Image (cartoon, rainbow, N blue to C red; front, side, top):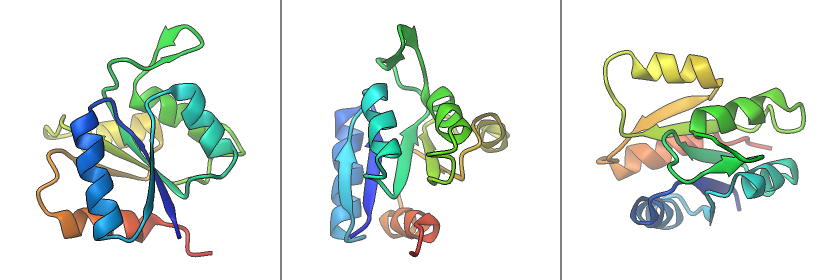
Length: 132
């Protein structure tokens, strides 16, 4: 079974995503907003894909506040985790945000919140899952 790591600081969003992914997608789900944990899980290959909230209000790495863009950049810069698909999830869905966020972060895809179409949400994630 494939595992999705949800990096999200809003517990309600995390629960909703978790429920959709387990019920509709048949996926395992892990959740954390602890950046050290995110890096450990990614490096240990304990997740097949990461759903990354862009605006993480509580996340700190090595003493500095970081957001989902920064964490994604760190994952993509590390040869161990560079191939791990990362989907940014954000409520910032203004014209041009998608391209800007994808370009800045190196993420593989982008989903805007709120997630209205649950099946499309699951399909978008399944499409990026490694098939090995």
